[in-house]
Length: 422
Image 1: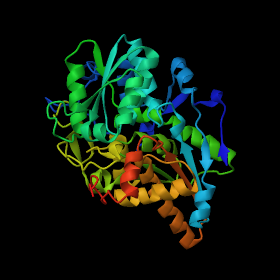
Image 2: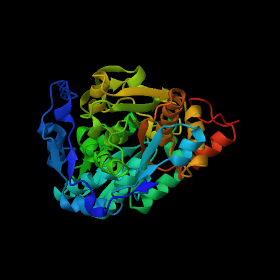
Image 3: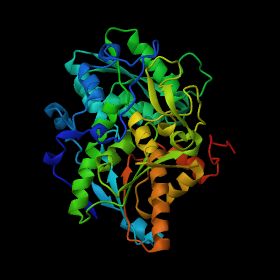
């Protein structure tokens, strides 16, 4: 079964979780002075509207009409009950997923790419630079820039650039200019931190350019809250008051924040962020100030981090290979409001296959992390006999990740690293 909302019910305001945090966020620090940064420090990289959203304490922030017009091309997204998966698992749990794969780019990422492109266009900025891991964010920003007539330069982590050639083609189809990162070392597999350095360095040295980030920052998570807001309305239509647990994969935090943050005020709703053991930031990282990029060009953020010089293994879930996590998500984990777990990619692909063979859709490797946790929660409910309600974010499809499935299905994937080559 699925529950759809009409296009006039796209949320008209973004939910701001900052007023609901039990501990205030630590301020970002200037990379040179190590003092709290102000709007003028960020102005070379971001439009003032986004800088304002980054620090806003308002509980709701209106979505511009021009942004709503674009979001309505695919939103609201469906809420689907995974009844065939429930039956395959023999669980009394009821499993629902928010299908973000129906966007033009195939993931949740356009929810923030569209407003970012809009605000930069409104400020007269003709060109944006960005990084991308698996290519989902680069695809989304290329799509958004094409709608608003902006140039888009994408620095793609070299491991993913080589693993996922059709993501590059997708970006180029929308007019994006894609290059592998790091640009100065063609033999390096790269990292999101390095790609951020390349993109920030590019934007900072050109007067016609701003930088656009697809995760981590407050305004990015803010834009993604349309996911959780819609899910609440749809669960009500399905006859469910609230879920028992909300699950999402988590790299920088945009997808997990989008599905989970609107549920933060709801007592009794567990929130579970799922990451790869190859880059287990929330479960093994340290909570401290660290740079958002490898070269130390960005402000220092207070977050869980593995260190800005961390180079992760080239697992297929490129969107989850980030050394840090969103300050908002890190704050909630530290406060105990959000739980975190980690899985090796062999267990993740096992879950992806089980989902595809019961439900039908083929999930992105990132999304499969959430599915792994969903299956484990459902099996736990089977043991206890609980009729638990599980909600998760189906953050993107895997139709451009079939090389990863080929490696898994033919035994060329180790538990937690690159393809074995066997």
